[in-house]
Length: 266
Image (cartoon, rainbow, N blue to C red; front, side, top):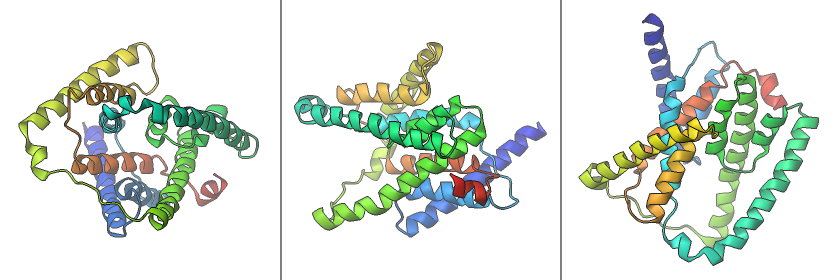
């Protein structure tokens, strides 16, 4: 009982630090503030004597919701415009395979990464699925290598690429979700149905030993219902930010105990 209470207290402490980090990053207008802010403030505490933990029992619900969020990017328009994106998608697959091969080769030969760790660290995208796949690796030292490499890539891209598009294309006005929508009965029903169906599908994927079952189930189920326009409700910005804080905290606490020497080596 005491261990349970201690784990709950440690998790709340880590999430609180993550929320503060996310808020600071948000105020500084940093990219992906709630995710990277939570990650790096918890990472900062890894160099102190403060021991931070995050309950692994929360990871599956987090990945399930993230899967639903990612599936929300699909819609019926994609089916009608398949001729516009199919060729670029094939080219992207070729690019991903080629770049992953050469970068992973470098990580194996020069940085002494293990093969599976090098591949995950070398992938030029899909940060969420990569993080989800880390649960298949039991060695936490391997987790640190992948997280640091991927986080560095994300920071570089979101810190510099947006300025390029802003300079050439200008700023775009984004439509925000109606705040009343979050409390709508139809919204609660549809999101609740997606969560339940995604969870049931994840049990099937887990039974047939598919990697990252919770993340993939959320993506497949929500992607199907959004593409067929059976369901229209999507996770609001508030929910996405909360999930990002939890995920950033989970990643940041995995770096606990990392030394500066190890960081520079990665």
